[in-house]
Image (tube, rainbow, N blue to C red; front, side, top):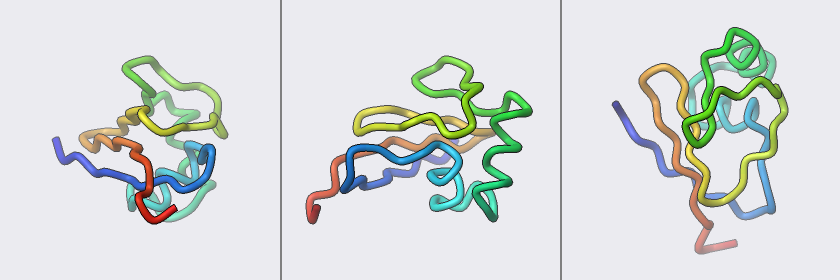
Length: 75
């Protein structure tokens, strides 16, 4: 399972936008569809909110991709 570290410089990022920015899908709308299909978990729990706020320290999984949200050292 590939792990991606995503540096976050703001308070949060919406899960659909995170999936787009790390390359899991092509658009925020496609990210929402993945959530709607039940393919996304946050911290090991199924995520049903298409625009859930993801914060530093959380782990998002979709398919075989694991995204760890870290603090942006530049931000």
